[in-house]
Image (tube, rainbow, N blue to C red; front, side, top):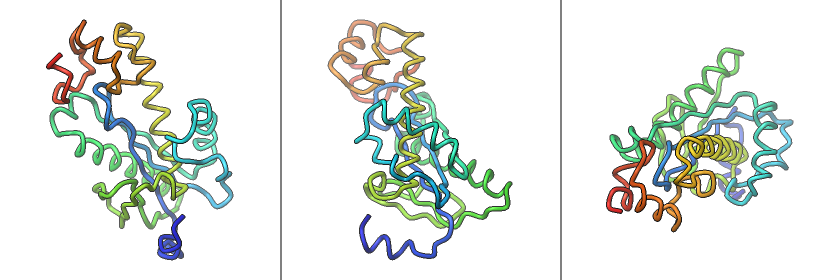
Length: 203
């Protein structure tokens, strides 16, 4: 963690970290998670989800859910992504997840103090919010949120693969791979495709 950021975080109170997964794919919802962690959390299991293997993420996710003070995962559908654009959809998903975590914490008498969001934008939340570029490799709470968002979205895409097996969603998770483009060319988009994304309807 950067020294300046560490200094700024001192005495800030309870932090909620939030991150999204699935901004780049051509299909499926965008997911976001929010997490608040206790001081005795096993932080050694955390990392940027992109630097972890699928097995490592799947092992870490239930531990996060069990030991976090509060957590939530929310999604915004492909249809709504087409309607409000992917940036707004990502911000909405993070805002929904943070709101749920705040409700959980306040129900137990805990008042969160700060939201730290991965990236360079602040999602619309009712707490002070600090965007942190590459926060998923710097802030434990954001790392945990990154893992939950990624694992939940991947599981969803594997379920979609059962419904639409011709696209290979279980392999590429909706991302713009060569095989995905080939499937779009052969079969056209399904209801889970983002029709406003380049390469979906033109093929």
